[in-house]
Image 1 (spheres, one colour):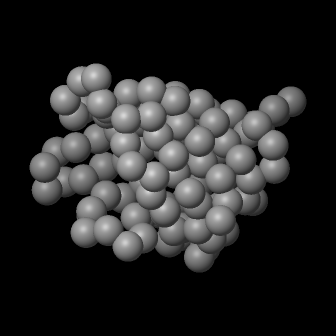
Image 2: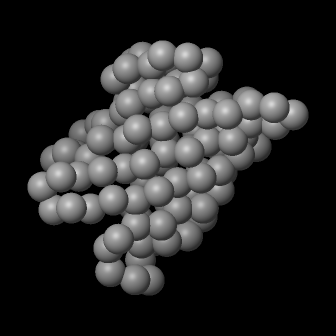
Length: 103
């Protein structure tokens, strides 16, 4: 499983600053993570699925201001995921392509 406890990932999103997330828990293909080095209390809940390829579903949530974002993508190469994300913030900044890669 690529999302092991303590692993760090660079999250690059169109319309948002690059950020690092760190995995807090992992069990099978399910994981949770948080931002590193920011005051943002968002929690990421993710799952990966495999068949002929691999896909990633990750939900970002922040209870304090009811912010939520969804990320869905595919594994482009080992430890590099890419796809599309959207959030409930002010358009057009909260949607676009994303890339998640191991640090």
